[in-house]
Amino acid sequence: SSTAGVSQVLNRYTFASTLSHLRRTNTPIGRDGKLAKPRQLHNTHWGLVCPAETPEGQACGLVKNLSLMCYVSTGTPSEPLIEFMINRGMEVVEEYEPMRYPRATKIFVNGVWVGVHQDPKHLVSQVMDTRRKSYLQFEVSLIREIRDQEFKIFSDAGRVMRPCFTVQQENDPETGLEKGQLVLTKDLVNRLAREQMEPPEDPSQKLGWAGLINAGAIEYLDAEEEETSMICMTPEDLDLYRLQKAGIVPDEDPGDDPNKRLKTKTNPTTHMYTHCEIHPSMILGVCASIIPFPDHNQVSLPFLERCVMYLAGEAMLMPLGCSLLVIPTNLPW
Image (tube, rainbow, N blue to C red; front, side, top):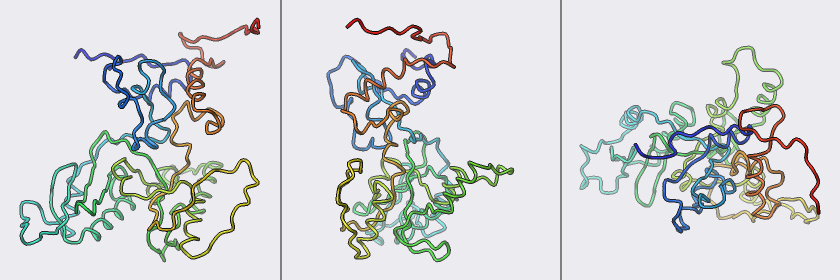
């Protein structure tokens, strides 16, 4: 192949620049073009692509970096999932008669029409519950298009995904979780804190990130599934929404704190939130997240700080290509 840039020398200037280079993406189009659209961030890039970490010059916007918690799916087999749905009333497409079931919901797996179902709400809830209990791989995406009468499932490789906290959709008497609460409870948080202080002797007893996924507290969403999800920005906003739904009007903040977060008013007409952001700073990449108070800077400064960060030398790292300023001097003016 004559494609250039497939094999690159890993950047070893600093630890941050190495991590940033490992999460770099490239748009394979000409650098000389004056097209603006390929260089801009799309709305679906929220939480997946860093909005600040991109080079200057001709490659601006064409070379991007993945966000901190962005994950690229590796792919899982779809046959067990198809068998699961057949056992729960899905009629395969070869036996489907459109005249008999004109309003049946079509089911697509990785873009292939595999069957139809008469009760899509029940089927979607069963498949989602199966994924939340980790019987399905966490990287399987489930999208129900109600208007188009379609249920799409994706388990292929190469989809960019990001984690979000899950919100309880129904009251659960077994766990004591109420509708609208985060599935991530204080017990799980305290257990994680204890594991940080005293790791368990048996590694299989460790909760960790994988344990939060298995407990259903965290789900990975891709851009397609985000279109059918309601995601609130912070757990505080979720609590405020629950109070409004219960008819309780919280006291308004007098606004004396100059450091408080600016936030929009909660929409009381929202039916139900399904997920919650882990933290708003997770939209940033490796280098942009190190910048102190990036949300208080003018928009051009994170670009400049990120460029200088690549060249900032570290005392403990001495690779072949490192440049250190040994004797800094004052400017003559």
